[in-house]
Image (cartoon, rainbow, N blue to C red; front, side, top):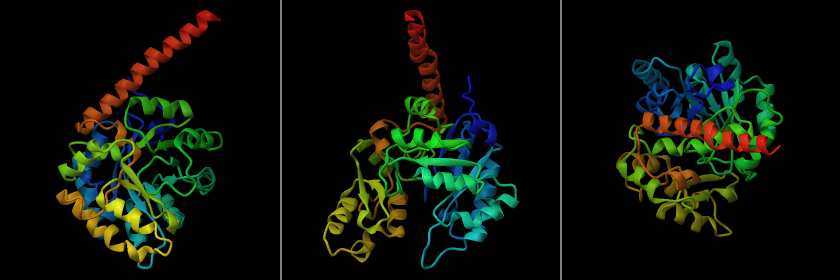
Length: 324
């Protein structure tokens, strides 16, 4: 049995499970595997060094799946911004405070837009601007959880109370229990990043995948807090050092720049050398105990969710009805 929601209907997918847009990880091999398994796979636009390289990767992905997939574009103010408008030609998922500048171009091309938000107010603003769906990210998520520190248990239903378009729940999801919980809280599906990193098809080194298994729910660090650009990353000797250096009252970004450079992160993913930089990870690490194929993972999540809905929850309703 497929779990049908507003999100699956709007985006034409089988299961309400979306792969997060992860820098260095969202490549055709993973995105196509997610889509082929019935979810929505996502290419990460800025993983590719040029717009042409992104077009080539999209072509590769189209050759690996006939099902829908998307392209993530994270748009943040920066001193030397990449050519966002060129990258935006085939985008379905966007994130960042400057993303809305690209929305008219995307909408005119008939592209559906999913926008990542970490607060209800930002989600409402994006809805008013005409996006097709929201990904609401709780404090548990990897990457940038915002500065309000609102966990998903509160943020998801708070957003569901006022958002009228399809909404994904993101941050802390990795199994069927989470999917059922997200649906019960008012979401139309889940967005998973860290959990998909620990799969066979994820194009990252096995030692990094093992780090996700070795870490537990405490195995992350929040960095950049004092810089008002909070990020959640995997706990390692490098991220521990970032936290230590930034704890100094006079510390600035320059004090940790060598530790968090993008090139270092790429080396970590490609070689498994955890001393080379930081890697992104969410608190869901505490729920990761194996490295399945993408299809095995999605099938497991859906089957577990259906068992919970048709079993435990159905019995609870039945008992309550009999008691009444």
